[in-house]
Image (tube, rainbow, N blue to C red; front, side, top):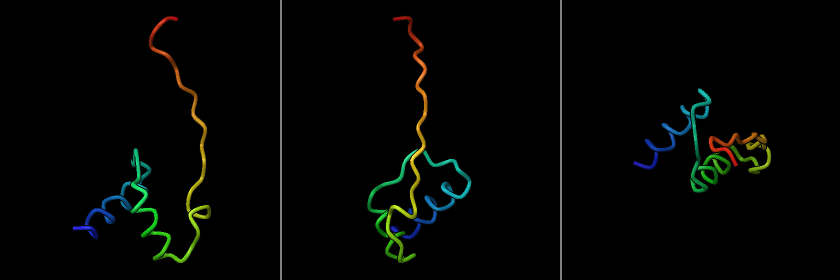
Length: 54
């Protein structure tokens, strides 16, 4: 079952449709690819828009 979850996550990452990734999956991917997490992840700041008037 774990391999299926990782495969689904990889597909979502590839298609840029992933909304979250579990830390366990990141750890397994980095171990498999033999890279540190910093080489795998990039930070992207997003701007939040309030739907309510403050």
